[in-house]
Each structure stands twice: as structure tokens, then as C-alpha cells.
Image (cartoon, rainbow, N blue to C red; front, side, top):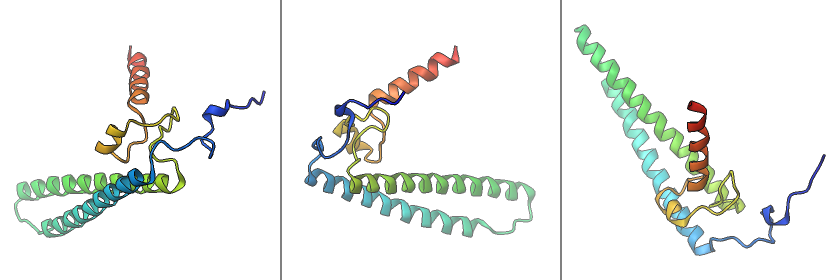
Length: 138
């Protein structure tokens, strides 16, 4: 059976955005600044990894070095993941979807967006996910 969703769930032009252009510009600037910071950090990490690739005669030193390299690679991957989230947030700004929860469609609290502008879920949605996850554990 094919049912139509109620009109209040439509994110078309009939629903005014809850963020104005000045707010979206502020979030865009914050996202771009964080993206630049992460790109610089990722570059520093790669430089550090290259500098760590020295041959050590001692097996213990080599083992410690490999642990350090693994840690730096993990840090770099986290930067890459966050950069990807930021790029998606910038796309959401451009297509008018920024600031809306991907699960509920409701606006994400602006205070949450100020702290984590790449957020895609509202606190309520996160709590619901956590409750479902917790209920499956028992």
C-alpha cells in the first residue's frame, strides 16, 4: 500500500528553514576553519610518520616505533573521517538540509550545532538509538 506522508514532514520550500542566511554563513565559516585545521593536522601526522620510518637495530625499538606509527595512522584516519563529515555538512548547507536530524527530520538544537556543526542527529534521536541499543543488550 502506497501512502503519502503528511505535509508537515515535507522539507520542501513550504517549510521555512529554521536557520537564517547569517547563521548558515557562520556555520559554513566554522566548518571551513575546522576542515583547514584538520587538513594541516593530517599533513603534520604524515610528516611525523615519514620521520619515524628509521631502521632501528634493536627489536624493542622497532616494536615501539611500529606502535607509534600505528597510533599516528589511526589519528590520521580519524582526521580523514571528520573531514568527510565536514564536507557532508557543507553539502547540507548548500542543499538546504543543514541542521535537520537525519532520523526525525526535526531541527537539531542550535547549541548542539555550535559545538559540533557536522552533527546529523538530534540529541533525542541519539537517546532513542541508545535506548534501542541498550534494550538489545539484555
